Amino acid sequence: MNKEEREQIIAMMNREVVPAIGCTEPIAVALAVAKATEILSVLPERIDVFLSANMLKNAMGVGIPGTGMVGLPIAIALGALIGKSNYLLEVLKDTTPEAVEKGKQYIAENRIHIAQKTETAEKLYIEVQVQNGSGKAKVIISHDHTNFTWISKNDKVILDMCNVVAEEQNNEDVALNLHKVYEFATSAPLDEIDFILKAAELNDNASQVGFNKVCGHSLGNLILNQPNEKFFGVNSLYAKILSATSAACDARMAGEKVPVMSNSGSGNQGIAATMPVLVYARERQKSREELVRALIMSHLTVIYIKQHFGRLSPLCGCVVAATGSACGLTYLMGGTFNHIAFAVKNMIANITGMICDGAKPSCSLKVATGVSTAILSSMLAMDNETVSSVEGIIDNDVDQCIRNMTAIGNEGMTATDPLVLQMMTHKK
Image (cartoon, rainbow, N blue to C red; front, side, top):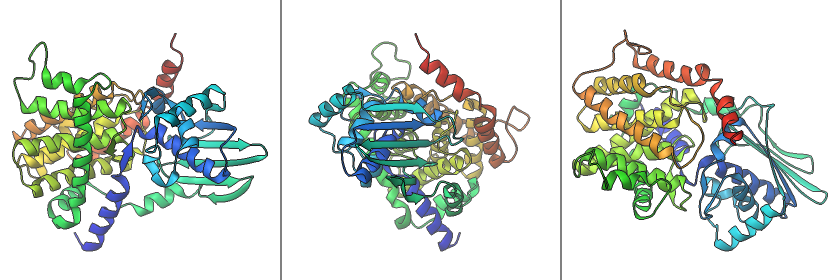
């Protein structure tokens, strides 16, 4: 791999692996509101928000950092009151108790209106219109959680990238395959890729928050302490990996004001791609270089698979992220490229089809399921066992297996999102 291609991959990783505070869907909405408010230059009297079905689904039931509240209204209110668009996915990091109280009042005054945008085919679409008197501003984010594609003030267009964003994004990215991921992770100079240790630092810190506080369903604490049945053995590596990963997800989904390192627009994907690899490396006393290369392997595999999925999908992101962590774990176990390909096939054969029904505290259950499958898949791979091409959706070519999985998510599950959203919005 030449230097130019390495630099392109590093640039792509630096775009895709970024810090985020809170679930990225409501935070992206807050970002759009913050930008629109800045363009308007005064606090809006009214905010209208139009979202794609996927955005609505992922933003309805998740905690908003620093608020003790759930869902879009408080995220929108705080975006207008204290949000700073230059913070990107940390847009609400200046939240204070006083700001939350003002946000509650803003909501009570019925200034916020949320609706589904039915006229767009984009899975990630946020349109915000703000007004104060005769002044108005409009902002659109699409395709990516921080990608502004439209900005206007009083009908004067400031930015219009609506028709070119997808093409430009695709042109910027390196076309990956699994062997290219493996080659980069195992051969790139260490000083060029050790930036990934920041993911370990942030996500490990989030995990400690999940252990030290009652967050969501506290699955991480339950697995670690096993107060009743000792299903996982005493102090087992399996329990440590599952609990540490779940605890970080517990903290994030409960709305703890703690940054995590996201991957491809998802904090949970970043957590699931990081924590199993970190815990295994720490417990098995692997070197700093081995940890760095395993984390790169994991995170870049996630980016590769997401190149085919897009930002949001009916398929749960933990399927993708846990596939990345299976690659990192297999590498740390001493696996070759063939072993890593085996692990990927084992993952795809097992949990492809897990639905995404929005961001919420129970995401930690799905993350734990994905990570558990990653461990099993890596163990099988290291025993030279893989699901064969005569079984189900598995192909001899590992990259075709990945395309099969993404086709199921993008094409086979097209009816899933509207059905899930209907169930979520029509509960008695």
